[in-house]
Amino acid sequence: MENEELSFDGKILNTPYGKQDAYGALSMPIYQSAAFEFATAEDMEDAFKGKTSDHTYSRITNPTVQYFESRVQAITNALSVTAVNSGMAAITNAIITLAQSGSNIVTSKYLFGNTYSFFATTMAAFGVEVRFCDLRNADEVESRIDDNTCAVFLEIITNPQMEVADLKAISAITKQKGVPLVADTTIIPFCAFKAKEWGVNIEVVSSTKYISGGATSLGGLIIDYGNFDWLSSPKLHTLAKEFGKASFTAKLRKEILRNLGAYMTPQVAYQQSLGLETLSLRYDRATTTCLQLAERLEKHPQVESVNYTGLPTNAFYALSNAQFGNKPGAMFTFNMASQEACYNFLNKLTLVRRATNLFDNKTLAIHPASTIYGNFTPEQRNEMSVSEKTIRISVGLEDVEDLFRDFEQAMI
Ligand SMILES: *Cc1c(COP(=O)(O)O)cnc(C)c1O
Image (cartoon, rainbow, N blue to C red; front, top):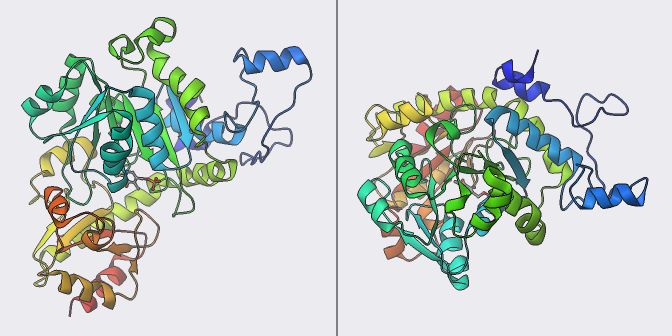
């Protein structure tokens, strides 16, 4: 059967290797080698000039990493996929590919903490302005875009606020304005969300989360859908005359990625490629449990409110359902009466782990205000709607009854 005709899991499991393995290995071998040798000087020249796809040096490409990328490409129908060594590396490499001094980025204040810091501090030092706006307000988004806007950046569901981006509305604006839409989709994996169908141009993912297969390793992915006209990009329009739809990937792979050096290692590519094989299975289990827990906690007297976009009572339910289906991820938050009540709950947990990270096979609980956002001022936390009454849960693969029992005994 042709790979394109297969289902999601079929595509992952049947993605062919770039070359036939010498020993017929069923699992892609880990090519743990910094460099690759050539039969002749001419072959070497061709490889360095990009005339052949032979590997030269593992900071640039590596067979194991390339195989992982080709599996992701098979399930996303992307023009190209680039694997890097963390979610933050995916975000920084993608943004540096697009931005230059004088550029601005239009985004929301509701961002992953390091992404916020990267925009507001790191990029600001190089003359790139960040324009925070309310992404629910289409007019505001439109009015903040100008000729120097290099990207509109968003997270499809923000964490811990759980605000859902209206991708149809936002992508209509970015398309009309000729600005690429860059989306961090870490919170909902490829099996439940098809970014291309919702107008995303560049997708960035922390593969540390769902894809790694149980928090085995850090990784990131940059996915280029080839659906943007780069002639309208202030930085890439010259390149666009030569590379057309592939201009972003050309800039990323031929310059930014190799200069910044945040390559994915072959061991990690192996682990995360294996993680992909069970992604839809794990996602289905964790999200089913997540919805059940959210429903039960909503009724608990010690819980003031539950925030999960899969609950019909949630303000984003309809939008979330349209974009991500009826089980929108394995993370939810809930509010208790006070920070003290939250700490009390956390300290009594016996099965659920007190830890950061998302989408491990183990269920994790954290108090975001005092940890992830602990270095922000109370005013900044307020602006970011991070409350000291909130607990965040990342649901793993344990039995729902075991988890609920642990929650209940910790609430007393
Ligand atoms: C974890 C996370 C990141 C950063 O990923 P790392 O792999 O830790 O660098 C970025 N965005 C979101 C939404 C995340 O959850």
